[in-house]
Image (tube, rainbow, N blue to C red):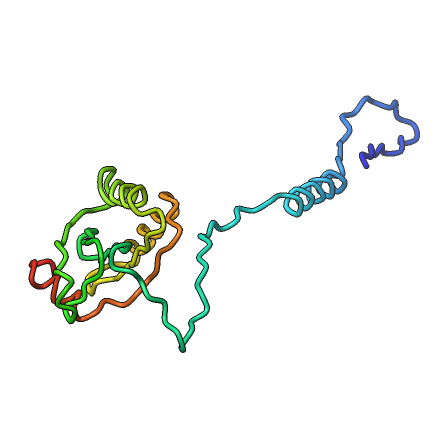
Length: 175
């Protein structure tokens, strides 16, 4: 604590008023500061990382999941943050199914979100197949998964780009 030290008066001289040196002990205040700092550090909540919940089904090797052509939409992620989509399935081996027309869009306000909302209104139980092209970047995959969450799509799947899709992209000059 604070202590004032006074020298003993010398014999025979008149005591004079002297300026006394003042010493303040800072130890209790430093202890209090560290206790408060520790308290606030331990009781605060740090920023929690935000993650998207993605539920992946257990793969069934015996019976693969079949998608109907009329209730499907395929999105192929391409270069320059663009994506190409078509409705239905691209099955060139089946002569009864015509080659679907390929459309191109991006992540702007009137881009893929409007397409997804229109597809959901038309096919509430539809399945969206997401395929990543060779020039796609990771950010595009995260953005399309965000769009699936925003538009509240119930069924979507991440699949590999097939040879038929590569041919369709090459035929339209998109790859």
